[in-house]
Amino acid sequence: MNRRRFLGVGASVLGAGALAAVAGPAAARLFAEGHPGRLLSSGLDLPEPFQVPLPVPAVLQPVRTDATADYYEITQRVAELEILPGVRTEAWTYGGTFPGPTVVTRSGRAAVVKHRNELPVPSVVHLHGGHTPADSDGYPVDLLLPVGSSSAGQRAAGMPGMSDMPGMAGMGHEAGRTAEGERTHTYPGKQRAATLWYHDHRMGFTGPGVWRGLAGFHLVHDDEESALPLPRGDRDLPLMLADRSFTEDGSFRYPAIDEDLASPGVTDDYMNGVLGDVILVNGAPWPRLDVDRARYRLRLLNASNARPYRLRLDPQPSGGDALVQIGSDGGLLAAPIAHDVLEIAPAERFDIVVDFSRYAPGTSVRLLNLFGSGRTAEVMRFDVSGKKVGDDSTVPDELSAVEELDASAVDVTRKFVFRRSGSYGWTINGDLYRPGRDLARPALGSTERWRFTSDLHHPVHVHLNQFQVLSRNGRDPGPYDGGWKDTVDLRPAEAVEVLVRFTDYQGTYMMHCHNLEHEDMAMMADFTVQ
Ligand code: C2O
Ligand code: CU
Ligand code: CU
Image (cartoon, rainbow, N blue to C red):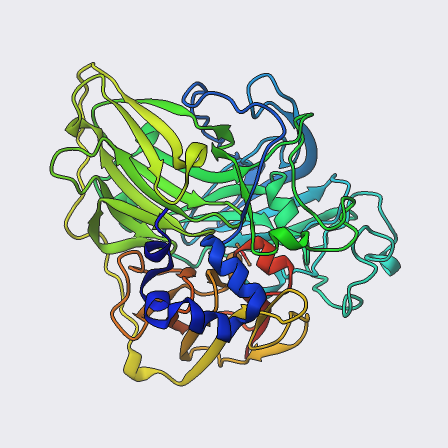
């Protein structure tokens, strides 16, 4: 990979020397690697690509419904999975699968999800992109302790990893604890159609939790989306991209500082992020999918801990513009944007339509990752069928009425500086995360301008409300910044301004880097809407 191109505009203007002065010698070393993270090699032979059919996670059926809500139950448990052909891998799962089951909800209806924890560790469930009341959002110390683990009085005490966490006792919300080992999250559904995902968010251990399998899709539909002639049914596919590494015996390999996960974080070499050498899509290594010569809606999610992807189809259809973006993290765009390549940072979603009728019957189309090298430069393959099929889908020129937030109506501007700390971990505005300390107190109903600046590569995520990107390095937003977003990718030495309006719910929420190793090593902050 070309280092200069990867670093982007900000870094080439500043120069590596200037950046090193800003971020210190340790950062200079990471910077010189040119990657947000370091490759962790597997201890077994990797399978040939394009052998395994693409799995699609099952849709979770509600256990009951009433006039205003649908009720779901998910049990978190250890499961033996066959991820690499012929190899058994013990995973931490939602309901026994990785990815977990897809929750499909309707805007305007509440979804009530009861989680039961049968894992050997505490967990926290967060709906990423959800517009959620604080007590259901999955604040990182709102632990769901395993069934049978302790009495109410000593929730965290004695659990692996919980003893040395300052500020743990008495934090967290009681609401939703329905029984020992169970917790109910209420998602009111006051949000537009969008591709969301749920994942573990345990304080200090989100990286290993997600790496071992705690992630799933949550799709919200609404009437505006349903009225559009977009591809649907079997031609509307969620695709969860995630890299992983495996040990000789088939377990997930992860460079935790402490194998028993008694203290958070990874060994020094992996501090800037863990990159796996196996690319999974929906939990299968480099899968393949038979496609009709028709349009497909692909809901891309980057669920990797630290790896960004630069996606391109190979071959490109003649005329290019193969990846027609119709949505972002927060749902449909106002109008489609055609791309030849798509950059997707951890936690971002891109909703795209690909028209495979632009390919001759029998064409094999690979999805490449131009940021990868060797095996990680490939993602999956689409095999275009020869048979004639009907396709009445289209991509309309107008997709959605998207309200544009008004920069001149901003009440407050705040700055957040994302950088490595001199000694341990990663900081926001110079501070390591401490639960209960607010970095901002926006007023309910107000619109704020948040300015994020970075030393290295940081995908910045804000809970509660989607935002709109106002500028990147003082200029217009980039090609991947369109629409409502909840995660924005900062490359080294960049400055990104976003507009965010805080609506509906008061309380304490998170903003953090979604490189999960950075997150676990303290690059998080609270903000309280009041
Ligand atoms: Cu997807 Cu606070 O995270
Ligand atoms: Cu989130
Ligand atoms: Cu980061």
